[in-house]
Amino acid sequence: MARPLPALVDHACELFAPLGTIRVKAMFGGYGFYCDELFFAIVAYETVYLKADAESSEAFRQVGGEPFRVTYKDGRTETMNYWTVPDEAMESSAEMLPWGRLALAAAVRGRKPKKTKTKQ
Image 1 (tube, rainbow, N blue to C red):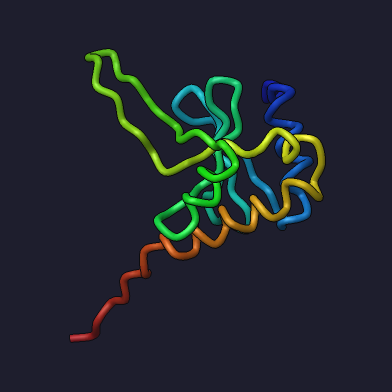
Image 2 (cartoon, rainbow, N blue to C red):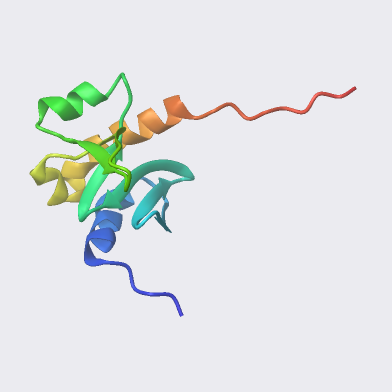
Protein backbone atom coordinates (compact mmCIF):
# COMPACT_ATOMS: atom_id res chain seq x y z
CA MET A 1 0.00 0.00 0.00
CA ALA A 2 1.41 3.38 -1.01
CA ARG A 3 1.99 5.98 1.67
CA PRO A 4 -0.09 9.15 1.47
CA LEU A 5 1.69 12.19 0.08
CA PRO A 6 2.59 15.03 2.44
CA ALA A 7 0.06 17.90 2.56
CA LEU A 8 2.40 20.30 0.70
CA VAL A 9 2.83 17.82 -2.15
CA ASP A 10 -0.93 17.33 -2.42
CA HIS A 11 -1.42 21.10 -2.38
CA ALA A 12 1.21 21.59 -5.10
CA CYS A 13 -0.53 18.96 -7.25
CA GLU A 14 -3.76 20.96 -6.97
CA LEU A 15 -1.95 24.19 -7.83
CA PHE A 16 -0.26 22.61 -10.86
CA ALA A 17 -3.36 20.76 -12.16
CA PRO A 18 -4.31 23.43 -14.78
CA LEU A 19 -0.89 22.92 -16.43
CA GLY A 20 -1.61 19.37 -17.60
CA THR A 21 -1.27 15.81 -16.35
CA ILE A 22 0.74 15.94 -13.12
CA ARG A 23 2.79 13.00 -11.83
CA VAL A 24 4.79 13.00 -8.59
CA LYS A 25 7.80 10.86 -7.79
CA ALA A 26 9.59 10.56 -4.44
CA MET A 27 13.29 11.30 -4.88
CA PHE A 28 16.30 12.21 -2.75
CA GLY A 29 14.25 12.91 0.35
CA GLY A 30 11.86 15.17 -1.56
CA TYR A 31 9.44 14.94 -4.46
CA GLY A 32 9.80 15.64 -8.17
CA PHE A 33 6.90 16.84 -10.30
CA TYR A 34 6.30 16.03 -13.93
CA CYS A 35 3.75 17.67 -16.19
CA ASP A 36 3.05 15.72 -19.36
CA GLU A 37 6.39 13.97 -18.70
CA LEU A 38 8.41 17.21 -18.33
CA PHE A 39 10.28 17.48 -15.00
CA PHE A 40 9.47 21.00 -13.82
CA ALA A 41 9.25 21.27 -10.04
CA ILE A 42 10.45 19.84 -6.74
CA VAL A 43 9.34 19.92 -3.14
CA ALA A 44 12.25 19.77 -0.72
CA TYR A 45 12.64 20.96 2.85
CA GLU A 46 8.92 21.87 2.96
CA THR A 47 9.33 24.29 0.04
CA VAL A 48 8.10 24.29 -3.57
CA TYR A 49 10.73 25.10 -6.20
CA LEU A 50 10.13 25.56 -9.93
CA LYS A 51 12.60 24.92 -12.75
CA ALA A 52 14.25 27.97 -14.27
CA ASP A 53 17.07 28.65 -16.71
CA ALA A 54 19.12 31.60 -17.95
CA GLU A 55 16.06 32.93 -19.74
CA SER A 56 13.64 32.77 -16.80
CA SER A 57 15.58 32.88 -13.52
CA GLU A 58 15.55 36.68 -13.42
CA ALA A 59 11.73 36.67 -13.21
CA PHE A 60 11.94 34.55 -10.06
CA ARG A 61 14.73 36.71 -8.62
CA GLN A 62 12.73 39.92 -9.21
CA VAL A 63 9.86 38.70 -7.01
CA GLY A 64 12.19 37.68 -4.18
CA GLY A 65 12.58 34.02 -5.17
CA GLU A 66 15.39 31.98 -3.71
CA PRO A 67 17.29 29.28 -5.58
CA PHE A 68 17.36 25.69 -4.34
CA ARG A 69 20.58 24.95 -2.48
CA VAL A 70 21.79 21.54 -1.38
CA THR A 71 24.44 21.11 1.29
CA TYR A 72 26.17 17.76 1.21
CA LYS A 73 27.56 15.86 4.21
CA ASP A 74 31.10 16.84 3.22
CA GLY A 75 30.16 20.55 3.47
CA ARG A 76 29.94 21.26 -0.27
CA THR A 77 27.00 23.40 -1.34
CA GLU A 78 25.40 23.27 -4.76
CA THR A 79 22.89 25.76 -6.14
CA MET A 80 20.42 24.35 -8.62
CA ASN A 81 18.28 26.32 -11.07
CA TYR A 82 15.00 25.74 -9.22
CA TRP A 83 13.42 28.75 -7.55
CA THR A 84 10.79 29.54 -4.94
CA VAL A 85 7.64 31.32 -6.05
CA PRO A 86 5.89 34.37 -4.58
CA ASP A 87 3.68 33.59 -1.55
CA GLU A 88 0.51 34.43 -3.48
CA ALA A 89 1.34 31.73 -6.05
CA MET A 90 0.95 29.17 -3.28
CA GLU A 91 -2.62 30.37 -2.65
CA SER A 92 -4.34 29.49 -5.92
CA SER A 93 -3.94 27.73 -9.23
CA ALA A 94 -4.60 31.02 -11.03
CA GLU A 95 -1.68 32.67 -9.23
CA MET A 96 0.58 29.65 -9.81
CA LEU A 97 -0.25 29.30 -13.49
CA PRO A 98 2.19 31.90 -14.91
CA TRP A 99 5.02 30.55 -12.74
CA GLY A 100 4.25 26.98 -13.73
CA ARG A 101 4.28 27.99 -17.38
CA LEU A 102 7.72 29.59 -16.92
CA ALA A 103 8.97 26.36 -15.36
CA LEU A 104 7.55 24.22 -18.17
CA ALA A 105 9.10 26.50 -20.78
CA ALA A 106 12.49 26.13 -19.06
CA ALA A 107 11.99 22.35 -19.00
CA VAL A 108 11.26 22.32 -22.74
CA ARG A 109 14.33 24.45 -23.49
CA GLY A 110 16.49 22.20 -21.33
CA ARG A 111 15.25 18.96 -22.83
CA LYS A 112 17.99 16.93 -24.41
CA PRO A 113 17.30 15.84 -27.99
CA LYS A 114 16.53 12.17 -28.32
CA LYS A 115 19.30 10.12 -29.82
CA THR A 116 18.43 8.63 -33.16
CA LYS A 117 19.83 5.35 -34.28
CA THR A 118 21.62 5.43 -37.59
CA LYS A 119 21.34 2.54 -40.00
CA GLN A 120 24.54 1.02 -41.22
